[in-house]
Structure formats: structure tokens, C-alpha cells
Amino acid sequence: MTTGRRGGRGRTARAWSAAALCVPALAGCSAQAVADGGGEGGGPGGRPAATGTAGATGKARPRPSATPLRSLPGAHVNIADGQTVGVGMPVSVTFDRPIPVAGRAGVERQLKVTAAAEGSWGWVRDRNLADGQRVDFRPRRYWKPGTAVTVRAGAGITRHFTVGRSLVATVDVRTHFMTLETAGSSRRVPITAGAPGMDTWNGTMVVSDKAAKVFMNSRSVGFGDAYADYYYYAVHLTASGTYLHQNPKANVYGGRRNVTHGCVGLAAGGPAKRFFDEVVPGDVVKVVGSRDTVAVGNGYGDWNLPWEQWRATSALG
Image (cartoon, rainbow, N blue to C red):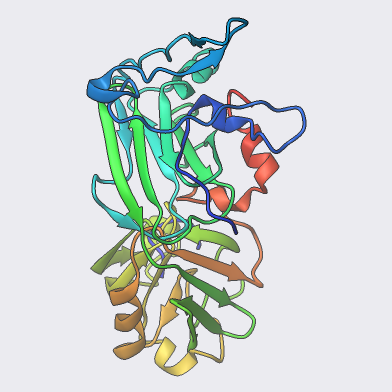
């Protein structure tokens, strides 16, 4: 069912702000990774951290301190302070009003992510928002489990979160099975996906939230009176209403045939509840073998853009 349209080497912690958009390892780019000094200005008590270079006399010559972050009214961050998330979770900042194209570079300079990861900000056309109301930070590859991340959106918003264990679920709509890889183990679970004409979105999706039960009404997606009921153990994947949830039809068709209206169905009881209990926001669900790829702004679809294309969506790229 669906409630919307169908469905290494270690590195030291780095602070990626505007500089994150030019990766030093790539020709033609220059960037400076700044260690987080604590406090909004980067040093003790919020003062800018002092750095220096040697001049002709051999004495340290202080560099100009970084410009302090200023307030970003109407900004909201998608991750709660202290939250533990999955390896696919982007940092998503949304705004009450659209940011004009000419102002987006300035906004990016007020956004800072401190983490042992290479990443970039990028502007996303959110399905439910106007253009210019959302900008996401995505690492080049999935976050490494255990990574500690600090996010600053202007002077007024700070979030600290941690990346938990890795969980990546791959749904193959052709074989009608989901392969779940987590904590060094793997298991296969029979599923049923979208029937022909109501195909489940292809591509990489990220769990945004989950609920023990969700009311789903087919009228909201133009499927008439096909269904209007509560469905249980619902894991939310897209803004258009794609879920991975318990579906009694999976008891019969799981592992055999695709019969849903776009969601991914798991058998009632054990399989659905077990997946629901272990999944957290930020975990990755990849659908393969289907048709249209989910849009970047339909939920957290950031991973559907190759790295260079993702970097190109930055106003500073």
C-alpha cells in the first residue's frame, strides 16, 4: 500500500562548511579542513581559534580569524540532538521561506558539519516544498558506523548525533526477496512489491521515520476504493507515501509475486515486526529491478545522484 504516489583509512575530525564543496583530492579544487575548536566561533568560550603561518622572520604570523556564524532565521535541522541514525542519513536543513538563488551561497557559508568524513552540501527540490527551501549535506559514501557528527546551522542551531551500526536492505522486485545486511550478518526475507503499473520506486531510499500503525487510503493516490485501513509496522521511505510494512498479502505472495499498490509488503507477524524493531531513521533501503528511480527530493533520495552530480548542486560548486 502507499499513502502517496507509488511507490579505509582513519581520518581526523574535520569541519566541512563552505570549503566542503571543493574536495582537496580533486584537481582544480582547493579547500581547508578546520578542526572543530568548540563553541560557535571555533575556540574556547566561542572565540575564533587562532592559527598561524611562519613569516620571513620565522615568527608566527596570525591568520585572520573565521567570520563568526550569524543567525539563520526560519532554519530547521532534521536530526535531533543526541540522536543515533543509520549510515545513509543526510543532514537536511529546511527553511520557512525559499532562499533566492543569489542568496544560497551565503547560506551555505553559515552551515557547518564536523565529522571524520568527506561530504558536500547540495540544494534539493523537495517534493513538498518550494525551490530553495531545502539544502542537504551528504557524505561521499555512507557514514562509517560510530562516526560522531556536529552540525551548526548559523549561530543559533547546534546538533550532535552519532551514526549507529550499518543496516542496508536490498529489495529485488524480480526475485521477490529482500536481503538484509547488518552487523556482519545477512538474511533473506520474502517480500511482495508493486504490481505492474503500480511499480515500487527503484533506487536508494533512506528511512525517515517509522510507526506501529499508519492509516492508508487509496483515494489519496487515485486508486479509488482499493484500500482504506490501518497497516502495521510501517517503515517510511518516501514523501510520496512509500512504506515497507506488514501486509497480509505477503503471507500468500511473498517470495512469489508482486501484488501491492507500490509499497513493499512483509508477512504478518514475525518478519514485519522483526524488521520494524531493528530499523532506525537513516537506514538504507535499496530497490533494484524496478522501473522509475525515486527523485532526490522525494524523501531522502540524495544517494541517487553520483558524487560529482551531487557536488554540482551546491551553490558554491
